[in-house]
Length: 242
Length: 216
Image 1 (tube, rainbow over the protein chains, first blue to last red):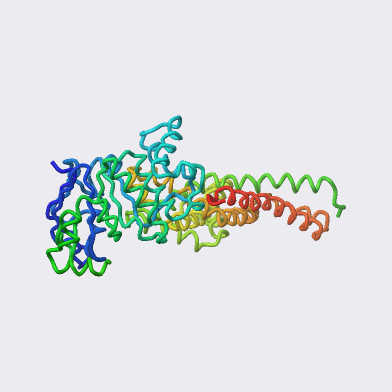
Image 2: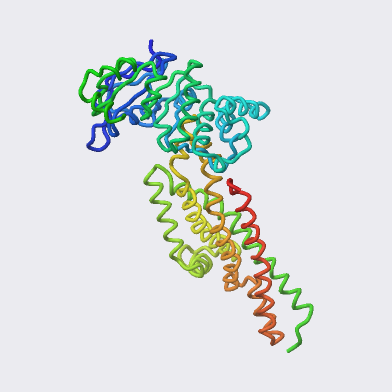
C-alpha cells in the first residue's frame, strides 16, 4: 500500500475546475516533484492532501486513512503531515525556539523540560542551531524558511509537503533551503514538492509529475522525463523553464 | 463662602474612589464581554456575527448619557423596576465598555494574517490553541494603543455618573467650587488629578508595546 493514494480527485473553485480527475500514488521514502505551469492545479492538489481544501469527488488516503476536512482526528492527522508554504508564516511574536516548540508543547509531544533540546535538535538539522534565541524578523528569508521546515520536523511527520518553498526567496538564498531539503530526502523522508526549481527536481526527486490543465499529464523518473518528454506540452514546458 | 482648605483636598480625593470604582466595575464586567463580542464578530457562524454586530452598533450609537438615563430613569417606566443607581451605572458602563473595546479587539484580531491561523492548523494545533497562543498575543499588541486610548476615555467618561448622584471627582469638584467660590483653582486641581490618573496608563502602554514587540 502506498503512503499516499490519490484516486480520481476533482476540485472546483466557483466555476473553475482546478483538478479534473487526478490519480497519483506516493510510496514511503519517495521524493515526488510536481511541476507545471501556474494554474495547473499543483498547489491545490498539495493543499488537498493536507485537508486544507476538501475534494469534490474522488478520494485521498494517507497511510490508509481517508483525508477530508471533517475527519474526526484531523489534528492528529496534521501532526503526521507537515506542510511548508511559500510565505514562511513563522509566528512573529515568538522567538525561534518557541516557534519550533509551540506545537509540540501544545499537542503533548514534548514537555517544558525537553522542549529546548528538541528545538536544538531540529534547528541543527536545518543548520540554524545558533539562531535558537533570535526573533523571526532578525532572520533572512532563507533562514526563516529553514525555521519553518524545522517547525514541521519538530512534529516528526511521516510525510512532508512543500508548496513552492523557494519562490519567495532571493536567488542567492534558494540554495541553502534546497540543501536542507536534500538532506531530509537522504534521511528517507517522504516528500511531495511543488517547485519551479528544475535543477532540484532533476537531481533529488525519484519521480517527476507534470501537471497540465488539472490533470497528471505525464510522469516518470527525472532523467527520462527531461531527456525525452512524450507530450508536446511537457516539451514546451521544459523548454520554457530553461 | 470659605477659603480653599485641606478639607477640600480631602473631599476631592475621597471622591476619586468612585471614579476608580466605576472604571474597575466597567472593565471588570465589560472586558470579558468585549472579548466575547470580538470573538463572536470573527466567528464562522454568520448569525452570531450579525447579532454581535447589531448589539455593538446599537450601544455605540447611543450616547453614554442616554445609556445612563435609560437604565436609571427608563427601567422603572418601561419595566416597572426601580434599579439601584449603582446597578444602573454599572450596567451602562459595562455595555459601553464592551461595545467599544469589542470593536477595538475585533480589529486587532482581524489584523493578524489569516495565514497565521493556517500555520497553526497545519501543525495540528486546535482552533482554541491557535487563538490563545498565536492570534490573541499578536492581536493584543496591535490593539494596545487604542485599548489604552479607550481606557483614558472611560476614566474621563465616569464624570457623567455624577448626573445620577454619584459624587465622583467631577461632581466633588462642583461641590468644592461652590463652597469655596474658587472655581479656577478647584477645576485646575480636578483636571490635574484626571491627568495624573491617565498618564500612567499611557506610559505603561508605551512600555508594554515595546516589550510585546517581537522584533525588538
